[in-house]
Image 1 (cartoon, rainbow, N blue to C red):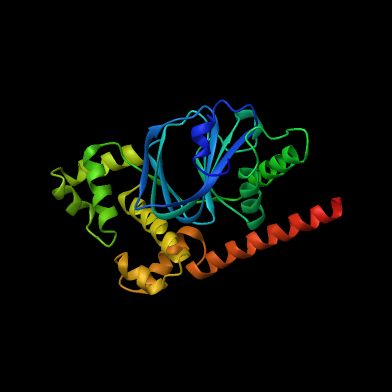
Image 2 (image 1 turned 60 degrees about the vertical axis):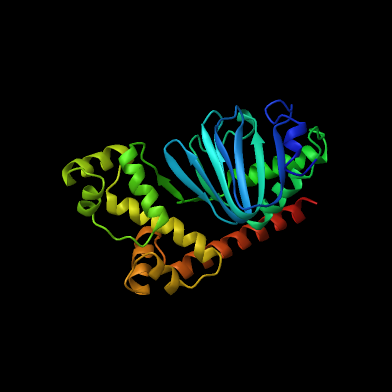
Length: 279
């Protein structure tokens, strides 16, 4: 019952265990779940492919080796593109009290990844008091310590602003100014400026910058060259893109991604050492 279709046989909301996990690979041209919510919290981990979730007027990206935490009771939709390997946890609210009360993306270290996959292979009614229960608790402890990533993009609810968001999604290299966008959606620049601040809580330039960061991280994680990503996002040079990336995330792209790999490896080594000492 470790494949994704196990959800058809067991309702995740009714399984009397702290965690119910499913996972597997989907080879598809795309899948989409419309807006829905769960009583239990949910963790969506992507091992391959790109998964995006719209939650509470925000777009959350789940690139490979990351996961999205969605607290219980939050409406969300899920979309996957291409060949996807995904694992999903349904967690009782009181089983992970240290997890954030808001939606967030977390980095998944190698140890935590293997623990999640291991939990997904357990029978739905696993032994809570034996080794299976201890495995599940270890996974929850590692999840609570996972670092949070900045992969959130506020999404506007106003239909005029959604037109702008959809246009940028279709063409991330569009460098139109807020005045040009105002003319495209038939409103004054002042009105558009105020509407953007009210709807998404940041300037248009900052919002577009965050959008570019999310697109760039997903493409860089696939191994694409910085220069190619920079030009596709409309930057005049790779150095201009690197300057923007460093301003937002504190490090240039190569160092940022390498640091995440080192942190994940170090966390895995520490966890293995702790396990060895406990034997």
